[in-house]
Amino acid sequence: MKHWSVLIFASLIKTLVFAQVGHQITVKIEGFTEKNLLLGYYLADKQYVLDTAEVNAKGEFIFSGEKPLDPGMYIAVLPPKNDFFQFLVSKEEQKFSINTKADRPGENLKFVGSKDNALFYDYVNYLGSLRPQAEKISKDSETADEATKAKLNTQMDALNKQVADYQNSFVQKNAGTLAAAIVKANINVDPPAEINQLSGEEKQVKLWTWTREHFFDNMPLGDNRLLRTPFYFQRIDYYINKLTVQAPDSIIQALDRIYKLMEPAEEAYKFYVIHYLNYYAASKYVGFDAVYVHLAENYYGSGKAKWANEESIKKITEQARKLKPLLIGKTAPDIYLERDGQTKMLSQIQSPWTLLYFWRYDCGHCKESMPAMKKFFETFKDKGVTLVAICVKNQNEQGECKKFIDEQGIGAWYHAFDPTGRYYANYNVETTPQMYILDENKKIVSKQVPSEDLNEVMDKIIEMRKKEGVRE
Figure 1 (cartoon, helix red, strand yellow):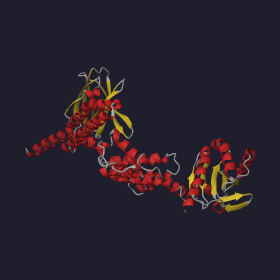
Figure 2: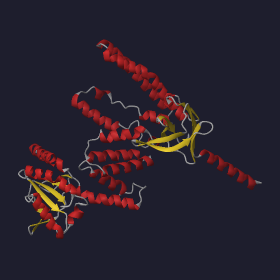
Figure 3: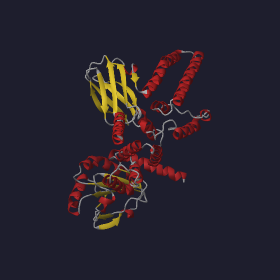
Figure 4: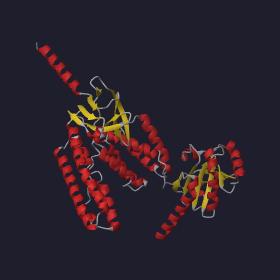
């Protein structure tokens, strides 16, 4: 008897556990006559369709599966107009029902079995009830005299305080819920009064510094539940692209900070390491490949990217290895230059500035850029710039290179050939044209500049060097 009791008890436990796993979200929409309803979710700056449900005999749409849904904010989309409403899915609440109406579905929501959604929409509806009052104050202020406008501003301040008090109370009372986490993440962090009392440039600098430091105070990046919300990416993107100086070193520092904060949220950490690795690999801004190199070395090369297989890690770190010697600020790799039977090293070119240009006579983009390159040479040949042009063909094809040079009338350039072929590996010349602007010490100061922008870029580089000389 004991043996059978144990088996029955174990079977019962297994049944209960199975009944609690997975998800089942039942949606009923009054007045909605379409046969399908879409389930979507947020990730980064996009929305993705996760599932489609067909209406059943009871007029219900049921999204279900054996696996739980990832916590976050989801969207139900009503074809064909693509009206939608949002709802929350927490780890604890995977089975609940939603009732609404086809007319303004986001304003008629009722939930059964989901405390998180009931809380969240209590919050949304409360803010909605105050919106007409706020809009009226704003509208009246447009035509009010100064005395009336001051009174209206006082009313608006009182209304804002009412909202802030409600938000703080909501977060405290409902701590731990997804609804509270979302509300808190969207509460602005106000700077201290002493900063607001400042003026001019001092205020702007201190406000910017303080904002950067406290930007994520209310939004824990290490909370995986926030990954699938529309504001998570917006906040990170704003921090990187608006609050961070757009220079590689500053961006690297900002990303390292973000990843440190994200570490407890493994999925978010993985997603954003991959996201920004790819983003800066494809960046069109000069010098931002330094960010890619940093991420490749410090996250993939160090073993932090535990999700990546050996092949991916090898590919990413190998690309970083090729790019690293060519980063802005590095001394350009030395190569042989054979010219008129004489050979010298690139490092032996005596010139305040060198434009190192790799090209081919059968390269379409090289031909397209030729008019701009000719203009550049004529503009800067007497301003301390030497244009070193290397035709990236083997020795047997150098005759065709010379023929093209004669046809184009560009014989005054410093044309050379690297008999060792080292340029290919040293400069990662997989495509042409490629160009590097070097200073008198052959340090890379800019690279891969579009030919049509070369004149402007070179002018700025020379001007900056003059200013640096004055400061010294």
